[in-house]
Image 1 (cartoon, helix red, strand yellow):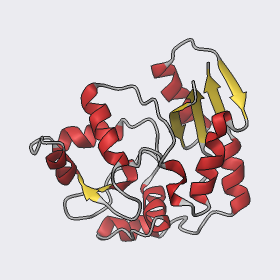
Image 2 (cartoon, helix red, strand yellow):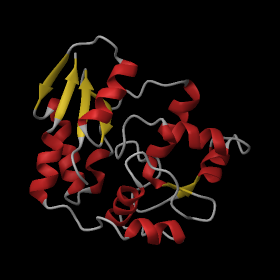
Image 3 (cartoon, helix red, strand yellow):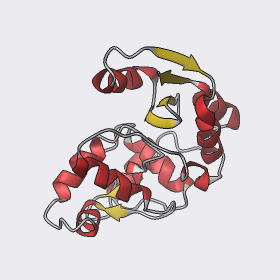
Image 4 (cartoon, one colour):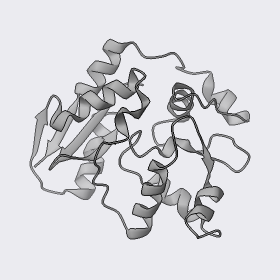
Length: 185
């Protein structure tokens, strides 16, 4: 999976990104000027993410989040959290579930702005033909996450993405990645 960096405040996860550079950008947009303090396991969140990466898929389900965003974005992100591990949904299906059948592109845009990967599982949305479509962390990570959860991706893009970095990360790698965290005050 590579390096995972998180940010939390007040016991809530505010961001989960693949790498510190992406995290820094996310925090600058949302918390400009807020002091940042490094922490090993803020509010116990890193341990829950590590448990998820080591196979306890439900470990992230109860993590409290602070996503920010518009009301529509928050509604999309709440709906994503209701998709169980091991399942996928298309952008159109999620739009219909929200009562906005014509809003599949808006759902896709909100999905792409999700600041909390994995915990708000944007990787569980797939194209209308069940193929893998954009993922900020890279399609190879999306394919890995779906396989990790027991939902093998289908379609041409899944086969292409599935060819790279598909092995299960060693627990020491997952542990190091989850330790890399920041907490805006």
